[in-house]
Image (spheres, rainbow, N blue to C red):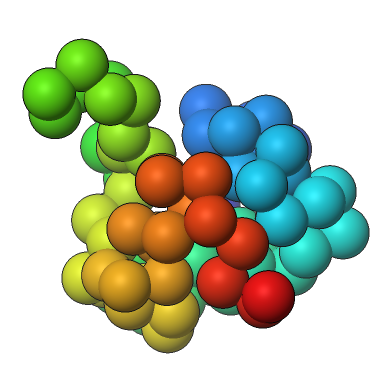
Length: 77
């Protein structure tokens, strides 16, 4: 069973950058994607929080989209 988007550990972090509505949309795309790979751990790179709930490359949005969000940059702007 796929998780609900609000149950993904990074939902709050993503919604703070792109808003709750867009977070719902983008994370729904992630959990319904055929290559969705959940990760059950969170880690830091250079003391910077990393969205580590799923493999970024295995999403429709791709690595760059999630890197922006991870850096606090809204990729829609």
